[in-house]
Image (cartoon, rainbow, N blue to C red; front, side, top):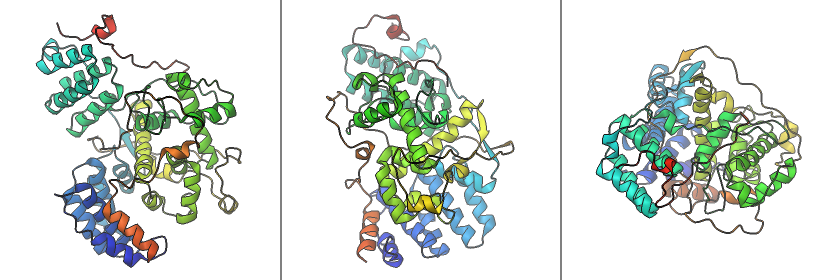
Length: 483
């Protein structure tokens, strides 16, 4: 693709010969890639539509379903079949928690609003507490058998169909200190069409912005935290990114120095308030470094500013009027970063609604084009934190038109959390080391295509959920315990 060898790239992708029964992930990526190349690079909407229809037949995850319908709509629109295109956008819009579902809704009506109800809330059920699997979960917590506890929780979630029971299970797991697992259970419930929106999109009080520059919006801070750590304040990744907003020590140290914030290594990074203060300052920096671009800033938070510079050189500047920003995201060569940008943006839409009294204008299309673009900026593109910074333009005002019902959440990638913290290493290269190309598990079709183309608010302190230690007799840890 980079060399303009579109026919070769298409042939490699379309010839993947993968059946969805054998490898669903590779099948989905092969069909999407073939359809996308046919539509956007070969101007063959009919061929593209066939691939997007095959993609839809093979997938069930909300992210992939919405992606297939949205791009089928794009293909039909390019073929001049506007009525059929609208139907495909409507099908994607039935999944308004997903990136492509949100984009599809704005294709139908730019002034659509997103409404997010609370859903089921935890209750106090003695019958639930006395279930054998729930008693077993408590027993495993007492014994400190966290790995087996997680297995039992997953088994319990698979067997539940009642919304109230699901909400009770999520709360139980939270009480045991397994914050990330609780969020994953809530997401699993959403995929069963169980409305658990408040549990699947938890909110925590963000500390007052203490850095220099402009505070990032709270909805994005929460959306990014949900993706980074699943709100587990003790999360430590294999890349040694730590805490709620998953900061690498070297990045945290530089951010603290730049903004005059306190930093005491792991003590700061695993403290919810300390971590969020540094994370918000770092997020403010990357948004300013890219002149207000949310797409570039989110990508830089995950993969580093140097990678964004590289991709601008290859694919153009997503802020430029002649660049299709959705194509730009799909061309990002790291699957983790592509997924990350889309998930944080879709989360931001949901959190805006929650924080705005449960309803807010859908502004994803505007968010995609945020950022100041000039030819001078393009020529002197830099991610230097001392470069000139510009504020983001305001999101457009829209009328109150309610969107279609909220339906299941996504199968998003989760951070890989090590159970035991590692000693803090010596200084590493900033955030860039966090995301790397994933050779293992990478789509065969995508790898072939790319290889072939090259050749051919509040000031409140954030409280972490305490973990219940084995045998704990505290009132908080006894809450909801059977017997």
